[in-house]
Amino acid sequence: MWQFIGKSNLIVVLIVFSVSLYILSKAADYLVDNAVKLSKIWGLSAIIIGATIVSFGTTLPELSASVISALAGHGGFALGNAVGSCITNTSFILGMGALFGEIPVDKKSSQKLSMLIAAALLLILPTIPYKIGNQNGLIPQIMGIVFLLLIPVYTYYSIHQDRKTNSIQNSEEPDNPKGIAFAIVVKIFLFAFITAISASALVASAEDLAARIGIPDVIISSTLVAFGTSVPELSTCIAAVKNKYGGLALGNILGANILNIILVTGASAALTPNGIIITHIIPSWHYRVNSK
Image 1 (spheres, rainbow, N blue to C red):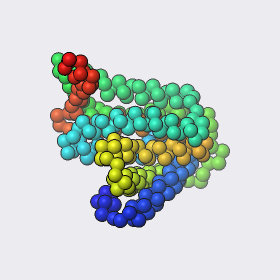
Image 2 (cartoon, rainbow, N blue to C red):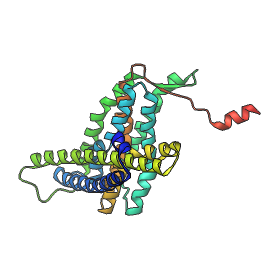
Image 3 (tube, rainbow, N blue to C red):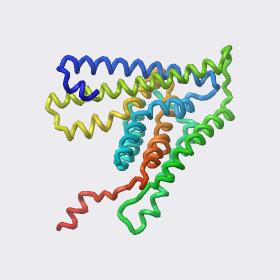
Image 4 (cartoon, rainbow, N blue to C red):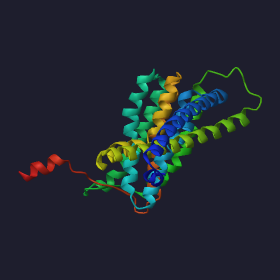
């Protein structure tokens, strides 16, 4: 994608940018619509569908980028991508979503937040024994495998708890709910894939346009590239909030953060035989103080 755009003339790059932006917005709308349909068929709340099925779809860019980095021996980049996506989701994307409408925070949301905190603790605690006496921490390979084993547990627990507490039943039960639900799940992943591809094309064309204008590489890499893998969550969040499904938007953000830890980091660590080294970054003021 990047090579094709880099070799194209300005008109083609502008067309790719415009078309990918249009497809991205439409795919996000269809993704949200099908997620809402699935929540009604299964009798689940929108926040749970957002935190499970939709989150699996929108986390694909982070997963692919981190796995490729881990296989290439760049475990630190894989971990940074996952953690950076969590920060982007919680700050920028949640804030942008709130500008377009209401995002309700109820008891189910607080339960998801508790699970996110637990996942974050799971990410931190295993590094502590390796940190003692060393500058760097370590997420061992076995911990990555444990994280991956937690994915079905997280999915089952989320759906099971919601079905126990959800009193809203679908009054119009379809004739073949299992067949229709399966078709909708396929559509959700299809639109999530289209969202990811169009987001990649959008970021690539934006990078090329910025480079042609004369914006320095360091600015491009620290903004557009870092932002690129979170575009699916952003488009889905805005589409959900605009259609008054704020619970779905919040569920997607919380679920994506949980999956960034247990799926993205877990897969990256599981594919790294020596584990992911967490380097100790010394702040710049430390050097200035010691140099005086």
